[in-house]
Amino acid sequence: MSSSRGGRRDERGAATAELAMVLPLLVAITIGLVWLLAVGAAQVRAVDAAREAARAVARGDSVTAAVARGEDVAPSGSRVSVHDDGGQVTAVVVGRVRGPGGLFGRLPGVTVSAQAVALTEGSSP
Image 1: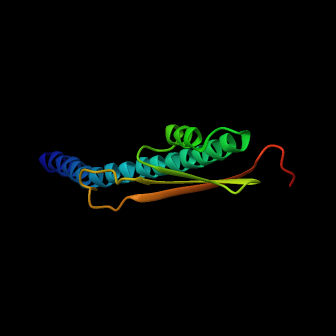
Image 2 (image 1 turned 135 degrees about the horizontal axis):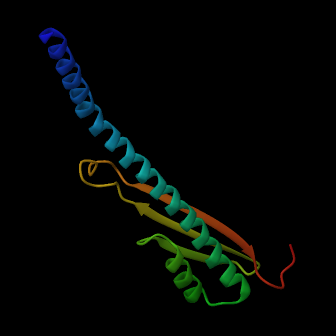
């Protein structure tokens, strides 16, 4: 009887050891997935910021006000530029998403960018 009890203890110990080895990998994968979601969200914000800035200038707002509106929507630290050639407005947003930090601090950041074009009001296509 003592041998069957010893066998059960060995199996429990093996399961605990396996969990201890797999758990850090699962945490790393989770952190990586959360970081990818953050990059995706930053890309969507960059697209929205470019669209807002281009639309604002196309409606007749000043370039300074449109850039400020775009910077409010864009990920923090992004650059917003607007070019108005008279009939068409182009807005470009470029931002950077830093790595998740911690043990992953050595991972490079990701650059997100977006461009939007709008026709100025009163101009024909």
